[in-house]
Image 1 (tube, rainbow, N blue to C red):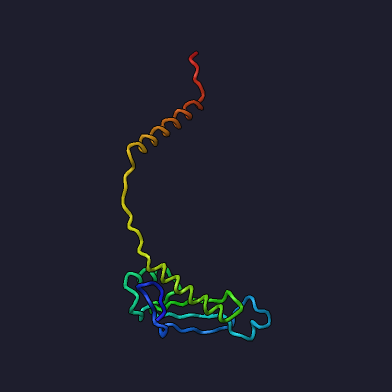
Image 2: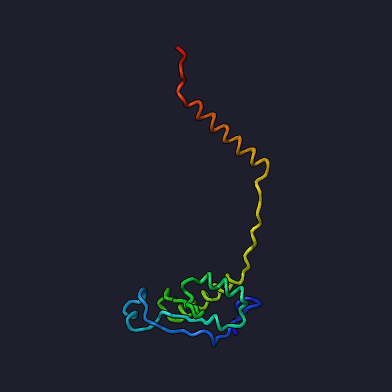
Length: 140
């Protein structure tokens, strides 16, 4: 089991990695060696992830998660396969950690009496400024 948080750990059998050729750094080696990593994590089959965390994970992942619940992470930052593999695993762990954090509920608030008075005072001052800009009408 791979420990993500104290409460969440994932089974390595639910993770599969495919190696493909990557563009980017690597010189001539880029055309010969499959350095890019495509990590697939079956989040739908993972029983250690609670339902609420799974829902947040799906929202955070966006297009990276398929309709079947498989999370796909593409790692091709480095010219080395091992570094890309570690990068993909770290990105998976970070995504799950972010999903594990419960959002703070929003509390409705009302503006204070003092803030209402300040707003009205600033409106009054603005009106005075505009009134002073008007042309003066003469009584002939």
